[in-house]
Amino acid sequence: MTLWRFLVLISLLGVGYHFFKDDPLITKFDHYVSSLIKFGSIRYAPGVLVQNSPSQINVRRPSFNHENYEILPVASFSLRGRVLSKERYWLDKQSNISPVDIVIGWGPMSDQSMVEKINFSQGIRLYSYDYNIPGFSVRTIISNSANIHLIPSNVNIKNAIINVKEGDIVAVSGYLVNVRGQNSWLWKTSLSREDIGEGSTEIMWVERFVILTGSFPRVE
Picture 1 (spheres, one colour):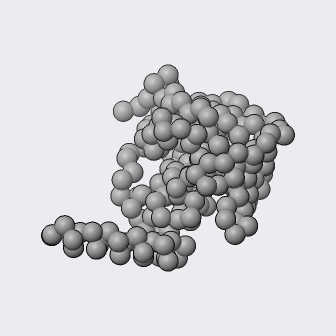
Picture 2 (cartoon, helix red, strand yellow):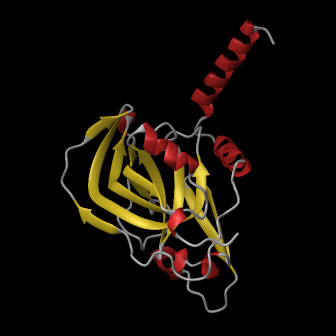
């Protein structure tokens, strides 16, 4: 391919993204590409790996600008948990500030004997699950897991988030935030671990992201 044809192709792809980035087909393409590059999930011996629930404290902090967005902190937020699912985004409206969502679990949702019976999946910035466990309450999943839209505060944190694997144990801290963009666009975070459906996901400005997997006994 000659250089000028390559440049024309790149230009056409850019134009297509500009006009169709919010199309459902684009979000399906994001999900398909992400699924192709997933690695095998890390496994552990049975037992709860993370006992504590997330810590959240409402705050009053001034907003700040990031990548042409206004970030509005509403609560400090820190947690440890097991990565139950990970989805990489390239083409949706939020992907330039939040390239990765992770579903993270604690308590019973960090126990290998429990999570291996549940199938977690993500797409269009939501997460879902299915299971066949007699007598099991779905509230166990809802109360002990969260789908978090991660906004890395620097390049090193961004690289750590992009490279995290399903099954990793991580420590994350920062702020739950609302995000305001052009034309009055507002991306609003959840402040509860008990809600479900649209608007129930957390948006997090990440100031610390540490992978702790090496400190836990793994099963090969």
